Length: 192
Image (tube, one colour):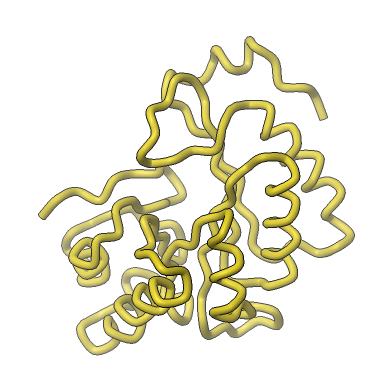
């Protein structure tokens, strides 16, 4: 792996964000992941939606509530000075998914940030009036109760951007979730 240089930083725009996302990370892959996160920590500070940015910042995301991966990632990010973002689900189909308890979320939130990611890992196209309470409102309120604060960030399965025609996005906006993480961007949720 090459070292990040000043020339690399100049190639990023003034407000550039370099994002790294994890789901399940097996123990045999953690040395490589640690090396990459350590290199990432040298690029710039952790992105914060409320902080001014002068130069590149970094975004580290952990998705789907894989407990072992989340706890490993949080501890590593603590050591290297990065803030991680965790996007749990609460019902999973795969072993290890949805493994974070409310106590785990509270502990993670002491140093990191917990974002919204649906209850059962649905795509935005699968959220409708019949399940929006269970899939959107319920998880947002559960995160708020566990961590003591409303999630500022949300992410849909599949990384969909904000579109106000989808009921799930309208509900996220009404609940006060301020940014949506997609496969293309980190964008503010527009006012109604």
